[in-house]
Length: 178
View 1 (cartoon, helix red, strand yellow):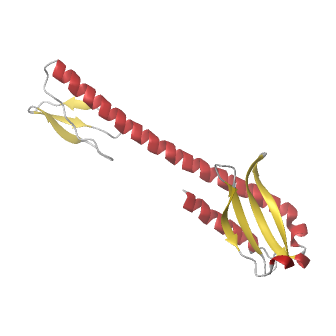
View 2 (cartoon, rainbow, N blue to C red):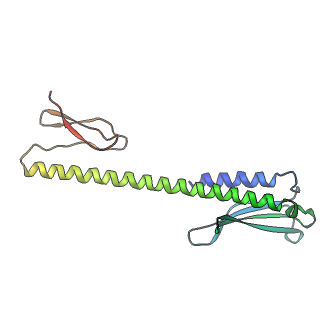
View 3 (cartoon, rainbow, N blue to C red):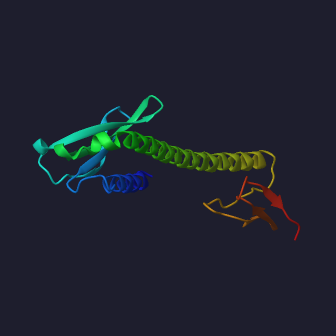
């Protein structure tokens, strides 16, 4: 989720700022593009120097040609670190892009899994209602079952015959002789 990505971005920014070539009074931030196309600050480490005494370098975080965010580094004017570490910082930005894309894919997978579960529960409910309707129309005893999250073999009954509902995969009813 978003908290996990934030933790990973904080860790990445701390690693970048702890490079031996980075001066002591540095700072940085990672901004990400939100769903509306606006840059949103996700992680920041404030520099110890005043704004007029620093250079800020903005390195795009790209997936191919698609902008995902920006890595911003603030270092003193005289440090020269941005010139010396430029190629390395581009590689860092590429790594951040992979991390961001992976986190977003995981979030989408979880969303789809939740949606799948919701639809499956709805379908099981519809099937059970249809089974009860058909049983009423055909004059058969009604079949009831208990459906819940994580339910396994839930005993139910048709008159005096026990029935088992297995919800570990698909719902099935089996009338057993006693």
